[in-house]
Image 1 (cartoon, helix red, strand yellow):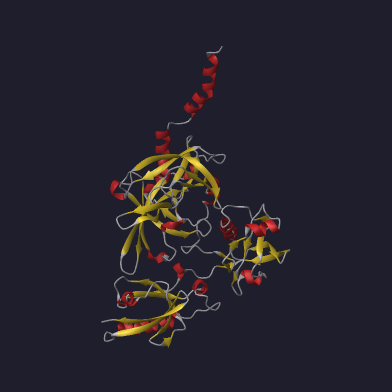
Image 2 (cartoon, rainbow, N blue to C red):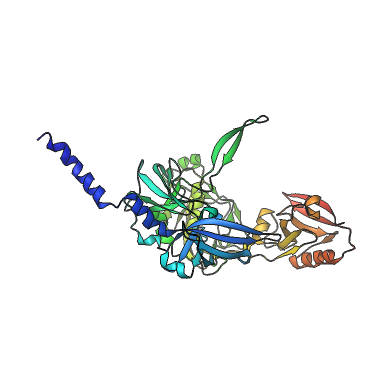
Length: 460
């Protein structure tokens, strides 16, 4: 009997090994949900190639890309020639850009053509039934570069810690997948999607540097995994337009987490709060009666959870707002002067974003001017609703304005001593200077970091 007992203990393990497909087989199957996406960003002076990794999410060939794949200031019209590549193959299929979802930050593209038959949505694979626990092993997919036909390779690691950031996220001991690609457990169940890697702190030593701190980010592989429970419910949030609209707007900025000492004093140690500071005039927050130093404790009756680090609750609150649409009403439980009150907020439509702004490039001058937006006014602490002047969007390296010291995000207030009240005035004035071939110089007065700068630009 003593000889039989150890053998019987291994029978369930043997059965499990027989039930689960071998990892190479699982890897090759799940690989059909991973793609590389190539596109170009048409800037004022060049066509910049971009290659990112993505996951197929539906039978129509829809693919999600990480939010960092496209800069927030890039207009949809600058995105050109999307192509989708399968791992290990040189063939590509055309794709269309659908937009960015404000809640998840994912960019959506959709492939077309014959390749659709070879793509398998990640939703076809079973998802994990519960969150992975400490030391659970997960595996994922990495892809080499285009010159190697995006050759796939296997990665695996163990869960080191689970955190709410504010979404439930697993951080593994080492890299487990390319950012944007799916991650699985040993049974081939979907565990989540690899996110953009976190920066790691290092010290750099050289002949002239003695241990200077530096932050390095691995752009090809990641150890950060957004779990399936935070992914699957949102795969259908395909934007209605390339700009990502509609986007809900609250209208309060400079939000801060409630101080732990204040929470303890108010006997709120088991939850978090968000302290409101800057409330925009006539915004939804303002119209609802929100005041500076109010502490938001709950949204629609749900207390804000206790998260670490404390600042994560600000992101949680923002996501709760973005789950709604413009025109939706929600209830906020607010602590004001020691008293708890209820406020009803009707969310508005997000003011125009940088990627939607009008802009004009002046080739001879060497920079792009764009219209002054609501968020520019917040950054420069201008009067609410101000549209005065124009913003500098792009400065060509080595150009006349670059030599004079002009920088992106400078606020142009005067041109040749004439106050600029609108973007149209700025364009007209700059166009006249651009077309005047005999013009030797002009003067810009700009605001930068709360200070005024006078720049004399020499054209010849």
